[in-house]
Image (cartoon, rainbow, N blue to C red; front, side, top):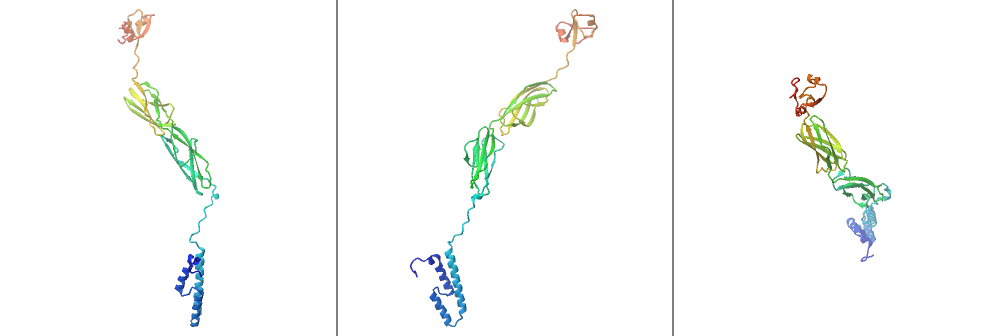
Amino acid sequence: MNRGGFSWKRLSGISTAKSRISRATGVPLTKSGRQRKVGRIVTGGGCLLPSILVVCAVAVLLLFIAAGCGGSTGSSPSTPAPSLSADSTPPVTSAAGASGWHSGLAKITLHASDSDSGVKKTQYRIDGGAWKTGTVIKVKGQGQHEIVFRSTDHAANVEEPLARQVRIDNRPPTTFAVNSVSVDKGKWITVRYKVADLTPAAKVAVRVSGSATKAFNRGSQPTNKVLRLRFKLPVGQYTYSVFATDLAGNRAAARGSNSITVRKPPGPPPPMVEVTETGSKYHYPWCSYTNETPVGHRMLTVDQAKAEGYTPCSVCNPPG
């Protein structure tokens, strides 16, 4: 017996458990004590069978406690890690914010997913530059740019690179009122205009100011192309101006303008009269006097005849 030294039973708790059971049941811990206990029961005339059953039950319980204390370290078994070799599918990455036109810094957000081993990293590059790790891409600079991105999972599966176009226009469009117009009242007015811009289309409005006002909202129209607009105006002096907002939201800082003139229509042509080299009067062409003069006839307006000193004929009475 090792009373003062190291004891595995004491360390594992078996001795303490046995002592508690002995006190609770009255069964001694040592073999000699149990023999004495049985001897007293037998010699005392008591029933032996119940005592034997108690002793057997205690022995089984002690064996169970010993097996439990000795075979357990107090920690639960660990769950084995999933096998990475079973993952052969690469991640899937999407990009948000790349579409459309941007008027300044473009911010694109990448989102990668992998349902097996999980995403390890996401990489991108801009305009063929070096690969960088991250999920937020910032692109700047006038013009069109290309971003390429990919993701890698923990099983070393690499996604096939994906590409997106990022378009930036931080400059306002320029508008042109190409031609000036001068027409008679009642005639169609045709103006020509143009919007110059990096984006392929713009929202366009043409406004007329002057003796009267008009506004023509043309909606989305192609840029970098001469366009036409027809309308009518009353007599007067006008200016037409072109306004534009491009697809990136930039508004034209200065508007192109030009002039429109609408004139009164001309009156009827003045009547023509006839003069002769020998006469001093001007006549209607059907006047009998002119018929009597075979040569030297000229056709003039009344004003021209007066300017040359002719006077109205008293026979045909042309306007004086």
